[in-house]
Structures are given as C-alpha cells and as structure tokens.
Length: 494
Image 1 (cartoon, one colour):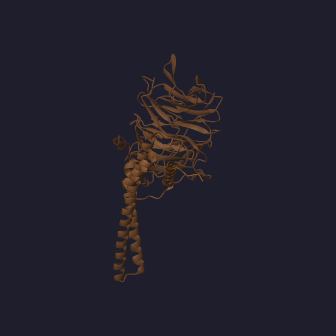
Image 2: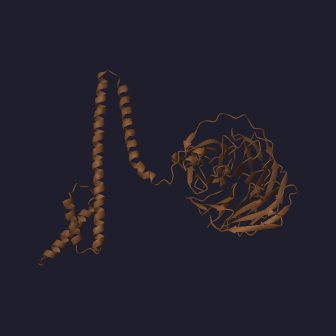
Image 3: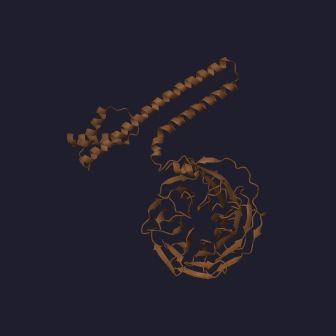
C-alpha cells in the first residue's frame, strides 16, 4: 500500500484549510493572531500561481473588509441594545397607563404612536449617517424654489412647441401634433382660441413682436400667418404647490395621459390664415419672425430655409447648404441674423445686416443632430444636440465654444432668459434642467408621479414679463406646464 509523504500531507491540509475558509460565509470574531496565522498559511502555499506581491495585497484588502464587517457587526449589536432599552421603556409606559385605568384603545394608540416615533428616529439617524456619502455625488445643491403653477391640458396629441406673446395681452401659444395650435390664459389655464387652419402636425408657433399675429409651421409643407383677438378671463387664485427643485421624487413612471383627453370645445376658433407661405417641398419644422416683423424665416426637411416677405408672401431668399433635414431656426432679437440647425450635426449663421452681402458661417461643434440653436440678447449663441451636450458660443469668436454642458439625455428645443441669461434644457428623459451661461447647473425642475412631465419634454420658453409664470415647458404627455422660477435664489446659490 502506498504511503503518503509528509510534504504532500501538509499541502493537502493547507488546501483544505483554504477551501473551508473561502466557503465560510458566517462572520466570526477571530483575533488578529489567528488572521495573521491564516495569512501565513496562504502565503506559504506552493500551489498558487499568483505572484507573492499580489497575494499580499489581496490579503490586506480582505483583512480590511473583515475589519469593516466586524465594525458593522458591533454597531448592529449596539443598535439592538438601544432598541431593547426603548422597548423596555415602552413597556413601562404601558404599565403606567394601565394603572391609571385607561381604556385599552388609548394604550394601544399611545404605544403605536411611540413606536412610530421610534421608527422615525431610526430613519432620521440612518439618513443623517449616509447624507455625507450621498452629497458627494451631487454636482450642486440648490435651495431655489421651482413652483409648478399651472397645467395647460386640452391637446389630443403631443405638443411640439410653445411660446408666449411679446405684446399685450400676454398669452401662451402651443403647437401640437393634433393639427391644431391653441392660445391659453396663463393665469387661469383656460383655452382662449384654437387655430384649425393646418392639415398636418403643427410643429412651431411664434408671435409677432408688436401685433396680434401668430406664425405657425406645419407638416403640410406650409407656414401660416394668422391674426387672433382674445379676451383674458378673470384670474383665479393660484394654489401654493411650492416644491424644492432638488427634492423631487420619481416614485412612479406611470403615464396618466394615455387616455383621450377631451379638448376645450367652448373656445372660439380660427380656420383661415391671413397669409400662407408655400415654397418648401417637405415638412416645415420651424419658423420665426425677423426683427421688426416684416419678414419671416422657415426651416424645412427639404434641407433649406426660406426668407419671406410678410406683406407680399413672396420668397426673398432660399438658404441652402445643409446636407440633411433642418430641425430648427431662430432669429436674433435685435439684429438681422438667423441661425439654422440640422441633422447634419452643424448649425449655420446667416447674416442679413448688409443688404448687398448675405454671409453664412458653418459651425461643427456637435457629433449628432443639432436640435436647436438660439440667440441671446447679447453676443452669444447657445446650441443643443442629441449628443447630450449644450454649447455656448461667442458671436465675435465662433471657433470654439466658451462653455460646454454635458448631460445624461438628448437635449431638445432650448431657451435662454432675456434678463438673467439662464438656459432651460428640456430632455428626452422627461427632465428639465437650468444652467447659467458658464455651464454651472442651477436647478432641476421637480418631476414625480404627481407633477411634472410624464414623457419626453420637447420645448421650453421663458416669459420673464409675467409675474405668475416665467418659464413654460411642453412635451409628449399632451400638456404644457407653467413654472415660477425664483431667479434671485437661483443666482444666489452660484
């Protein structure tokens, strides 16, 4: 019978010790001497293919994990002791209540109340102990208040675009895929007028700078100019739904707007436009007024942007050069400048300030579709893209952006506040975030199962002249939302 050598027997015993240690999942209060002896046995093993230095590092890491787990174990024991002592106090309180000949219901109520206080105390202690870790992952903390003021519900399909009038009376306009555009009372949320002149999705709405005229772009390959006359209803008191910007709880993703919402049928309607602009061979995705309101520019999926004369409805210029469909167009508020965005990852700046020269500059700052590019009152252009970035450019030096904002979702039609230059970013992931021009995040609008958008947010629009709502957003959940943003508090947090 073969006899096993002493060396092979010792090696087998070491293997068995290592295997039993690796399979053990029960925590024991081993001493440092036992652990050092076990480490020596592991290090002295001859069958390991790992280098000695790597084995030493692994053992050190495992030792650290063991110490941390032992500390947690001791903390758990201490918490159990505290809970037992509190239970003893509750039991003593219960005896005192019984001695006073009170009803059993009163005793049960008091015990339940004390138990809830204990549970709340434990929750508070846990939150306080973990707040330092959680706060390290937050980019910014903001005490600013973002208040949801009003929801504008009535469209039967997603809302692509919205804007507020520049002239009195100040109303909100929305453009929807249900082939209609609507005007709303900002204070009451009531539909004031419905435009029914388009045969396709209404993709954009912009208001004349001084007259009661609206410009809409549609999937029926036309842009319409139509007049409106509205009478504002008596405003109603607004309920206080103040919510901190960073305390939103996304506890549910259910879509409450899947049913067919009944649109407002009692509001007046307009069916015939004042002017119809026809020259495009594809969907007209956006349109805007040039400064002064005597000309308009349209952007289409036919890869061209057209400049029209409002009075004669004649085509003045066709702005060609983009390689793919256009997604947006915007005009400068004070100068004859136009910026067009495209799926070809570029946006172009068109200069009409000199009647004899129509220069164009091409900017390739993004890696995916440029969903929008807008002017600020100063000398800046802000562009957003499906590549999840927003970039701020200086008109005097457009070679590279002066700020880049990186997000976690595609960015849709952005807007910049006139006075404070705050950028509102609507996202595909239903969030709306606010940034300053240097790229610092200021806030995130609250969104939960009770308030906020439930689907993709398509557009944002500022209206700082309105005291009730100074920011509006709309999306695929068929609703527009009016927000009151505490801008001084936002800027104070910078």
